[in-house]
Image (tube, rainbow over all chains, first blue to last red; front, side):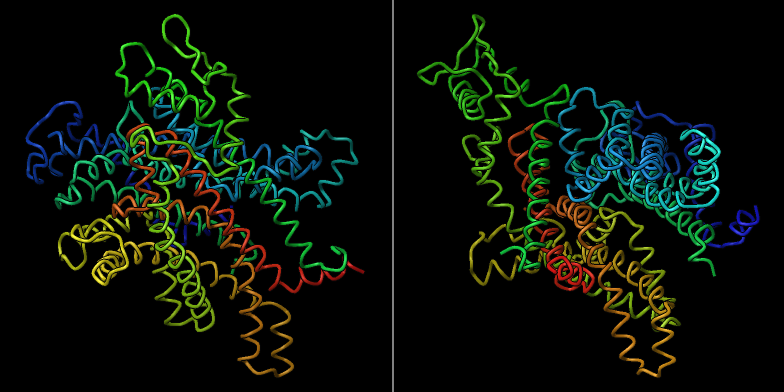
Amino acid sequence: MELVKGLFKIPAFLLGLFLFGATLALAFLGPIVFHVDVSTRVGDPYMAPSGAHWLGTDHLGIDMLSMLVMGLRASLYVGFLAGVVATIVGTLIGVYGGYKGGLLDDILTVLTNLFLVIPTLIVLILLSSSMDKGRSLTLIALIIGGTTWTWSARAVRAQSSSLRARDHVALARINGFSTLEIVLEQILPYLLSYIFMVFILQTATAILTEATISMLGLGPYDSISLGKILNDAKTNEALIGGKWWAFMPAMVLVTVIAFSLYVINTAMEGVFNPRLRK
Amino acid sequence: MLRKNPTLRHILGRAAWYFVTFLVAVTVNFFLPRLGDANPIDAILAKTNAGDSAGAREKEEAYLRQFGLAEVDAQGKVIRTADGKPVRTGLGKQFVSYLGLTLQGDLGTSFLQFPKPVSEIIKDALPWTLCLQLPTIIFGWLVGNLLGALAAYKRGVFDRIIYPLALLVSAVPAFCVGILMVYYFGIKLEWFPAVGGYDAGTTPELSADFVSSAAYYYVMPFLSIFMIVVGGQSIGMRSMVIYELGTDYVKYAKLLGIKENKILLYTFRNAMLPQLTGLALALGAMVGGALITEIIFSYPGLGMAILTAIQGNDYPVITGCTLLITVCVLVANFSVDILVGFLDPRIRAAQAAGTQ
């Protein structure tokens, strides 16, 4: 608790929290505060920002602010879902592998080592390009979570194997607790803050990854997302034409989300990692 | 012979591991595109319905034969069912023929630019990607490490300027840096050409005109990748050097009265090694980020080749490019691994101990 209180005294952490909170507010309060409509053409293509349309219109003449709010919601959804999948799978396998060792651990180590050198983006391109018609937002999130969990597993494994030699774990073992009990009661509680940081990073990575594969034209077919807005702006020559409102706001949002999560993570690391504590 | 030569044994060991990784990459490259609903085989088979023009028919037959996708008779003609659909071969058989072709370096023929072989498309794009990424990543790594070390050692003003800047740059997604540069320096200020790799009036050849125009177009993509690499690497190096400066051996060396420059040399050397390993691990991500940067700048490299292929469902080109990128990353990783083996005294010692 002392640590958590300390966290709220760090300016960087507060800044990150504020920025992330602001994007959440835009995503969830946006549709309540102003009229969000992404299916009607309200004007000409690429109308400059005006009083009626604060961020102008896109290449089809749809209100850009509406697109942005819906895109932000989709991107946050992808980030959250992929982050949860990658963190849960990674944590389960990482904790078990780190504590228990054995065959599963060996397989995990080989697997993570393999996919550390085979670029994730390549795997994502191959997988998403094969799923043309069914590439929904949820599927994209699952694909991202399913390819990035190896990283969390590796990170969590290193932590959990260092806990293995602790006295309280040995004591629990001597007292005949089962592996599951030891993992749940003796190991996981010590890793919670760490796992939470892994989750934050995975969420940030997933949002950036969605933007990246959408820019390759592999975005969701059933939804707008920040990446798709950027892709549309690029393919419909908003960038070359200098129509800044078509790409700048989406870009700022992606950057703000990634930056705020990154800052939150760095601040948390400074508090929870005793080696970095001043 | 191997017993007497630990370095060679280390190299061979790593080579064997990377060969296994390569095989996994080839397998992944074969199976992943066939997992989904829009897999290349269905796509090509769906096209071979009756009523196609002779040219389209010939194109598809060539592809089916080349990759062993359909059963052929003794004359090498594709066997078809009554309604004109080819009889497809089993997945195992397809994989064997794919593996055989790939190991021979044959990546097939493009759908979109038939009958251009994929290898030719790659041959046009690869030099651009290599010229852009290789120097940028190496140079960025060096500069990033220098800046990081400087920030850690000098602290004060350096640390207060370099570190926050690096944090900001590394948190901004790679494609955003690219978009910003295209917009401000390319479109608004018109300092540099916004997109492309060379002037439309020139053709890729070794002439002064072409080289100078290519150099002009090189500046912005180079800078945008360079900045990101410098940012990421300097953060890592900074914390490594800070950690090393606090270790017992540095304190002891100080107590012994060893000159500061000499201590610095030791710390830097020790901090460099994890950074080198970090470079190997980060390469895959860096190359991925750089591909997107290529796309933003419409740079005529592999990134654009992949984008065009994805837009046209040109599966042979997609898988050809992904395989090649993976191979490049593997080769780069392998080189770094060997380099670490030579530089790290612990690995050298372990190798020497193994021989006794």
